[in-house]
Length: 341
Image (cartoon, rainbow, N blue to C red; front, side):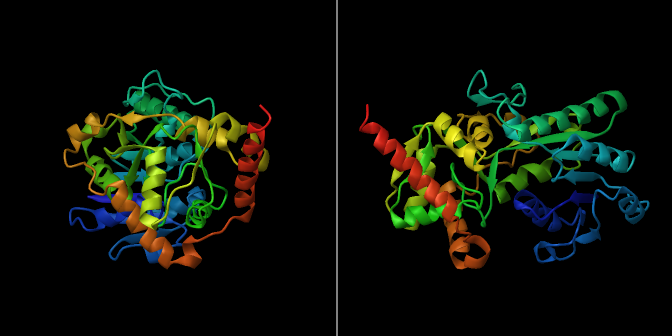
């Protein structure tokens, strides 16, 4: 069987490509600009192209047919429309990576299944993903375009440490604040529920859907089974660092109001995603992929990530003094407000 990955070198897709490359039943191809060749496993074939240059891509694809085409970098309807033009009649399965943030915020219940309604009034990113799903499922219903929808939640790897509130440079400044004993902002009261999935675990569920005819025309959420509160998540990180967590809880509405002024999209990323408690019911996926389970707990995954991050300072330790100062101002403003009540 032959698989094509559009992208293939990101947080999620790297693990999927690595797993599939070890399977002798699959011939693995990547279609991307070739900027991260060091991340491509041996034996994987490369088509170097800009996916938006349809004429060039069409010429380079030639008469190749793929059992699965996997789209990891499609965020706008125009991009999946392009893929439809490129791969209609050229693949037995088109797997689109959507997002669990597309589920209704807040949902009627905290247990989320693939049947939970899709609606997110807080985040344009999620609304765009919903629109992409709707286009693809319409093509499936009307023309038989062989689509499978995959909805990941918070998936991380050895180069990423999940935190709730961070700046434009990512997680490192939060880790630095932890190590310095400074207050670490946590949305809400820290008790909302969240699911974290290490990318190698995600790859088990994803590859199990590839080439599976029972996955055509269906949507699947792929997450781990471990559900934690945000306080637990931050405490586990602090424990791995060997420091005491100085948690500072801030209402999501407040973070959104004062953060959006500085270009931090907390309305979308918090109110539209991380601040909402969710527990994923993955029975639909496990009926098709019974081997899917959490093999890397968050406590294990954080230690794997910290080992990598702390040993690769140039790559992973991107300081963010602007966000650091903003956190200090938020704490100072809230502490001052307590004296005026």
